[in-house]
Length: 42
Image 1 (cartoon, one colour):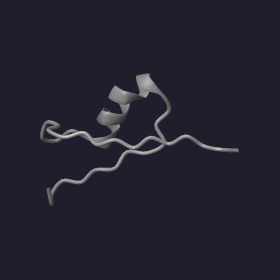
Image 2: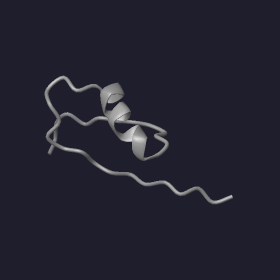
Image 3: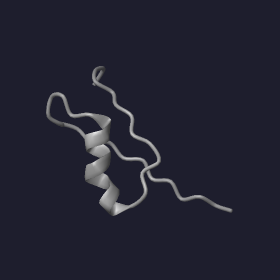
Image 4: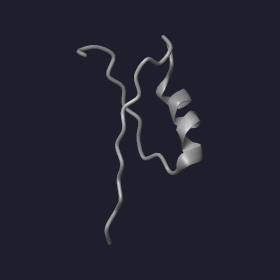
């Protein structure tokens, strides 16, 4: 069975935005299997 996975990046989130808050914003577009964050190194 093939699984279709799409990864995307979001920038300029407000300071203190949690992965749970981000997840709740994007879940309306489809299932979310994970949320990661990278806070430095850009």
